Length: 294
Image (cartoon, rainbow, N blue to C red; front, side, top):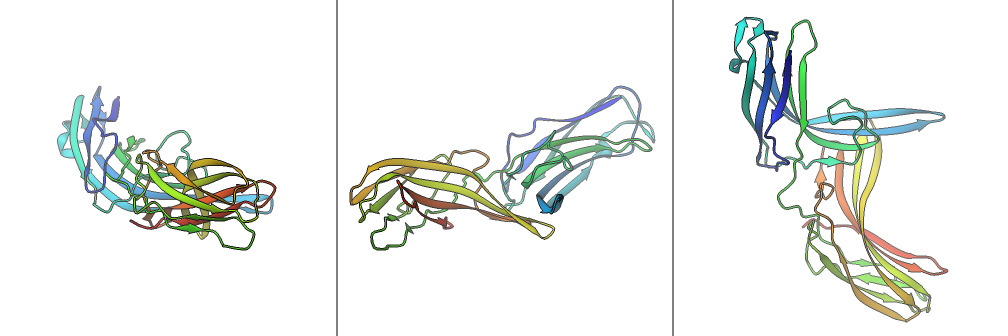
């Protein structure tokens, strides 16, 4: 007898901005109801499965960092104290986001929807969920939900630190001097120079530079680490020269996975840079370090 939904929601919002839209309630006939509420929740949800012999336990923990609610009862027309009059009700709304609001993060896929309580695989989810609820006495409430992504207007992932492998006799030695002070910004290229010393004349196949997002999260005492996505720039070497030098260019796509460093209640997120030299018939040389806050 009634339908509830949202209209005009933004494709995304940003810290310090607002989430605005219109709540739409369509009532075909007098419908029993008490209140119509609208709320915005910002929550972290961490899930970790731990093994104990042949059995396993799914550990889930949530933390609420934002909770705003309004009651829009006064916008409705009633035929009596318990029944809403037929018609279409459109209620404009706006929720302000604090300047320090965390970014949306999803390292675990949703299963069957985006509402709270929906099973997900292990990982971390940081979401902003709009929920409209028509309270129906002695019956199931009518509920509508929508997820609005929140991103920073300019996301700086950090500065690539100098990377250098141990300088040992007859061992391949690789040095990366960083990115010349240019921060890693999604959608913008970052160029970095490398130098490889090959005193033993080993056959070197390629040099690979990788930027990886690292999320460490906890749930009820358990701890897990998610290392993805990873973005790679690779250059062939193909020789036994005593020295190689060149430039690598890497671009982190400007997607929702390109979240900047953040410390939450249940998680810490950041980025790691690594350089690897592929040594044919030998041990690869690799060194990594976290990006430096810009």
